Amino acid sequence: MLTEEWRKAPESESAGCVWVRLHRGRVEVARTRVSGGGPDEEGPVSQFTPHEWRIFLNGVRTSSRFDLPG
Image 1 (cartoon, rainbow, N blue to C red):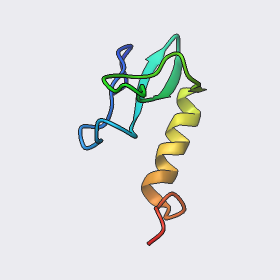
Image 2 (tube, rainbow, N blue to C red):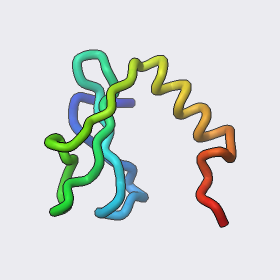
Image 3 (cartoon, rainbow, N blue to C red):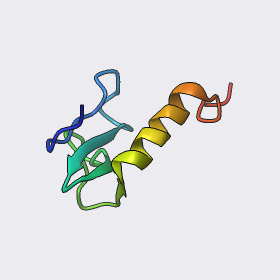
């Protein structure tokens, strides 16, 4: 369940992860700050409708097209 607070997957390392939150009815995704410790709100923040986000998550869960090579 998404909330207004930024959160990341517990399995994510401190660097190289993404942060997600629900903000004003949109799902926002941001990368980790270069210095670490939280989302980089100064950098690009992608926005999705909740419907788009559900479609994306379903694709990640059911398709190998998002798998890393090797």
